[in-house]
Length: 138
Image (cartoon, rainbow, N blue to C red; front, side):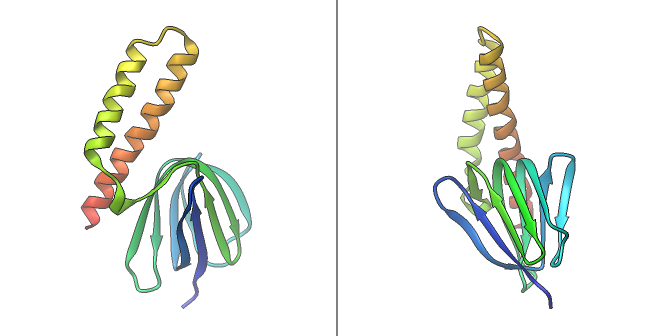
C-alpha cells in the first residue's frame, strides 16, 4: 500500500508526523484531498479540520486555524499558527470563546475591531464544527 508522509506543525510544536494513505483538509476554494504521488502544490488553508487516514484505516483529526499547505509527491506539510488534535478540543471552552467573540463584534468601535472579532469568530466556529465532526467519528 502506498503512503505519503504527513507533518502538521503549529507555532508551538509538531502535532502529527507519520505515514498516511490519504489527507483531506479545508483549502481556500474547497475541500482538498491528497493521495500519495500528488502533484506539487502550495496553498493557503481555511480554519477547519485536517483528516488523516492512517495506513491501518483509522483516522486522526486535527483542527487548524488556517495556515499554509505544501504538497510534494511523497510529503504533505501543514503549517498553522494553531493546530489542536481532535481529542484535545474542548467544546465548552470553544463555546465560551465564541460567545466572547460575538460580543466583541457587537461592541466593535471601528472596522479593525470588527475584522479582528470576525476573524476570531470564524476560527472558533470552525473549531466547534471540527469538534462535532470528531465526536461523531468516535
